[in-house]
Length: 473
Picture (tube, rainbow, N blue to C red):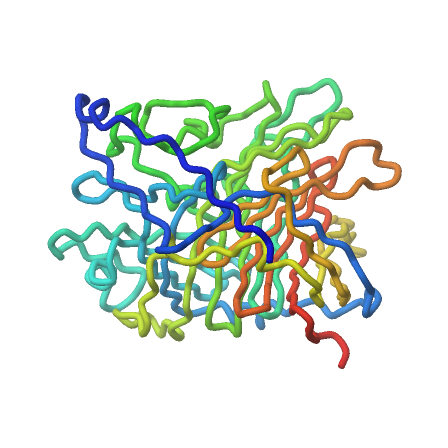
């Protein structure tokens, strides 16, 4: 049996130091479940292909209508944020007493519509500290209405809006409802003799800026980050508030987690640093899903400089489908979920062994319209089934990447991609998100960027331990 590794304990803070300062007391962080010996950070999981069960085969492009049919409706669930340095819970909001709140109840309504000829899914999200507050703030007729604030003590936020368009650059979706969203390029496009531009291809247009301000995409930092951040004016100004971030990050004193710039849309020409949000989602049977939004900052990728990606923020959503909205969702969910921060974490030995993996990959290519000559990105899909051997990872992250073992049996792994012949020493990066949906069944999405920071491939995988997965009987 593999030896269990105890999580490293942090030194206790001096109570007298905090008590002598002004400001509200800090709520205690959620404790691990009794008897937990969770490992929270390791190196990347070593994977080797033992056998190719099927070769790479071209498969049909997923239908947008099928994807919308799986994802549309009302999704109730829980949300939590976690530190990228140690996987510990981080505050998502402040309660009425200005204490940090680590777990939030969420209602996510997704509806397909068409605006100005654009086929899209409109997402509206509401968060609250309790199911009662969520129900009290829920409008009685339509999500277009503003949430009610008449209930006493309700801290539910207003609806947060986002849009997923069928032609969104960087979006790759699959028939089962899994998807990956993010920028097509992680770094700024740098022209010879010029500094990095504020956004790809130059300054953001007025229309694009307006759309981003209304949550119309996850590629760049937008209002989506409000789901992950603390209100700067409401947050305590106490320097003793522990955000559990890497010591190397800039330490600000504005009450926000110090890993985000004050102006999220500001150019980073002097450093070439670009901050983006990547959202990945895996589903089980169309009725359960796990979504993750990660904020990353990337530099390099040009002039022989290796791509460097820094993980800044993690938000995790565990959701259940409660039915079609029909104009409005039910005011209560059928089976309320337990706190996400209290959910079980996987251990490295849980993944050790032989797995049969069926994967579908979407590869973006450039297509030219024969009539207009205009270029656009499309995704080409293929499948493959392999038998893989997964070994225990190193106990600590390294320059080759690392893995965060998060509650809800979720894994987030950032790893350098294998060297490519002709690309020199520089390597790309793979952002992997996996969920142990059932015993001996791991489903996940991988988003791979090349050494220049451009999207190379998106893969969805279902891994079964010692059993048949899919493909051919």
